[in-house]
Length: 334
Image (cartoon, rainbow, N blue to C red; front, top):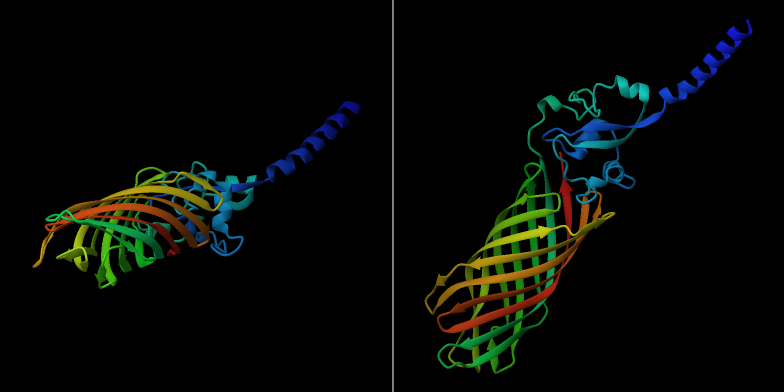
């Protein structure tokens, strides 16, 4: 009789101990599908706010260190992510939606998964201002006379729209306006201030989690010198076509800060006009960018240094520029 009572007490204690384990809170996991975005996954679970203070996007990034570099903007098919939702272990077993090995996310996953497009549908509006100095070294090919033309603080405004098509492919379209103000160390420079316009488009591909490659084509006005002597300098602007290759690498990401060095090489097409012909040229640029993500907004700062060389039939020209760029990016999703 005593043995039976002892067995009953042990069984009761073991049962009481097992109950909390069966109801223990765990985080929900989700297997990413092609075409998913993090904001859509969270919105499908009715989690809000997505972007304001203490938002669910940043909570998800905190639970998934692999998302820190992109701030949650890049997820890949078949990737397993932890969502900031707690369920009991019993509920987790019953869930037919997001789970570690389940491909049946339709019931709890993003709304309308059966009609989900196979492409991402979000874009970014990028607005930036550049402030820079430049020095133009010119040489008369007939007399070998030289001159150095220095700028005051030049400025540029650029607005761009970036469209993300899928996990690795992006296109962008932009307009740029530059204001140049120069002075000559020798003689009088005619036409000191110039407003130069340009536009372009390009393609960006994510090669790895940290490495992006940009291809860009643009048409931009550039300054050239036409003079009969170095004491009577005249500057003119001509429209130049350019093709640019721009690799970028994410050096490190800490919290909401991302540091990205980049380099670029541009090929400048030749042009013929009434006064002289412009030969083909090239430009090399190196930069270092720091980005701070704040929900759907990003603040950016960049230091850059570049050297551009494009000669004409009457002058050789080398321009060196250095400055900073500041800007803000708005991200838009479905």
